[in-house]
Image 1 (cartoon, rainbow, N blue to C red):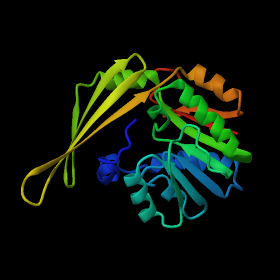
Image 2 (cartoon, helix red, strand yellow):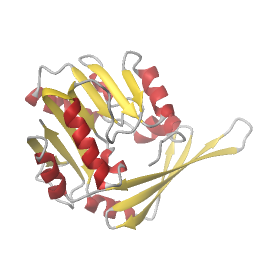
Image 3 (tube, rainbow, N blue to C red):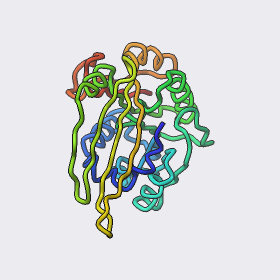
Length: 236
């Protein structure tokens, strides 16, 4: 699994605004747990999602990338951040809300790691706590892998992304960043990011062994299928 260390300085610029994801999480918390005060993000990256909750929550995050965490800590100096895996982590604390969004869960390519994450999440939730996460579906990964490649210009350089299918439910994102250096040379940064998905009914059944599934919807707020785009779950 990529640690995003090469990608970290460019991540926020390339990925853009994540206000829509923040709104979905905020609506779920307001509806299902308005008294919540503490929030843990699994795979918090540069902290851009957590920043949307800085005014009202005690913030905590965990990520494997030291470089991403350094950016997050600068952005959110009062947040408590941990470096480590999101699969089976042990933080010795409980939280009102735990989130795992922007297809972070898909970065775990073995289903056993999804099970470890769910077990660990349940252990880290306070009574009545919420677990809110999203996932790319198998259909979305297959659609993305059918795209030959795409190039995106940003303020200081160019990103090229090639999505390689490696199994019916798994892809590798080949990310290449090119940025002009001060001496006129081109600096190249590369990441290989694995993603995998699993059937929605399988994931839902797994969740039901540990949580109450309060909501399940796709990016159009409709009933999700394995051909949907991104699917959101809200669990207690």
